[in-house]
Length: 354
Ligand SMILES: NC(=O)C1=CN([C@@H]2O[C@H](COP(=O)(O)OP(=O)(O)OC[C@H]3O[C@@H](n4cnc5c(N)ncnc54)[C@H](O)[C@@H]3O)[C@@H](O)[C@H]2O)C=CC1
Ligand SMILES: [Mg+2]
Image (cartoon, rainbow, N blue to C red; front, side, top):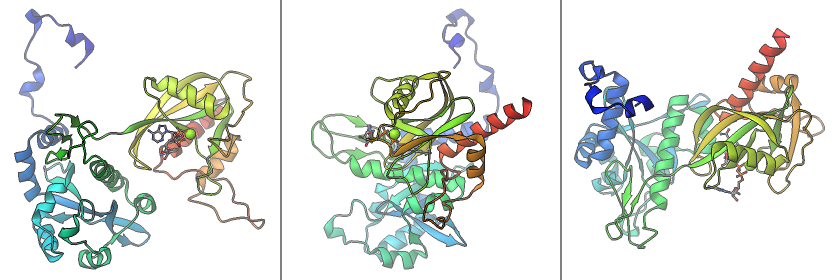
């Protein structure tokens, strides 16, 4: 709804034209997903004709195909047969969470076969399950970049939701168990009446430029040789702009002159974050960095040529003769890569114009 329509007087109110129009595939799909989240009965019915993506201790079930991975969803009837084979009750399906649906309204769910198992229900052996399911449970950190973009996004969402439910089984106020709704879009405590919704932590990621160079940094936990844009969790009460300015000041001791929003991304590691990516410029002539060694291993200015050359490389380069690893950048699927690519394109087009 636009702001102006909020202030329309009652006398000028009309039935919106859109009511008479056929709704688009996208709109009907979003409305259907909303219904599944709100209505337990409709969602339970959707499970019987839906598809299930399986996990084991938060590792997704995947199939190797060349040097890529593929997802391996199962229908409810197949899943019930598999659960029975492993001595599990079909009620385990109640632990599944809604992760999306197709344009034809086939609902998709994720279920972790290992989480939430009581000792009496019998522990499911991972290797036995893998051979029965004809796939392997792969750590998402290893598999994410070898999935296609759509599946990577679906599997990350699924893992984030499954992790959130696993960590929020008790109410923080009453200490009593919480119950999920069928879709898994919330958990409720019957005792305190508290409602818990799946959480994401907002994180800002900023590519700082001085007009000709950009600033890239390394944390000691990064793979050897990899540099990325500056990042940091937003503090409570901050705007995105305040978080960006504070993080840059904290990590490299620079003050920003301007900043511009670029894009956002859901990021699963180590927990669910909403990455908010911005470009920023430092005040003219103020480029001397003072690295906060508690947060970063190092930070350096890189020229357009250096960054453009690094963007062309795929993955970590082999180490040089002296054992050093040449500098490289995060993979395509990471929003840091997108920011850096955007900066290179902008710089290249402005240097072509000059
Ligand atoms: N997708 C991408 O391209 C990139 C993603 N990232 C992600 O951004 C996140 C934040 O980046 P950092 O520079 O490490 O953040 P940071 O600079 O805020 O430092 C991390 C520290 O912040 C504190 N912290 C405050 N709030 C927190 C919260 N809600 N959860 C966890 N720790 C919190 C902890 O002490 C933690 O050790 C990381 O999880 C990282 O995986 C970082 C760079 C690129
Ligand atoms: Mg940081």
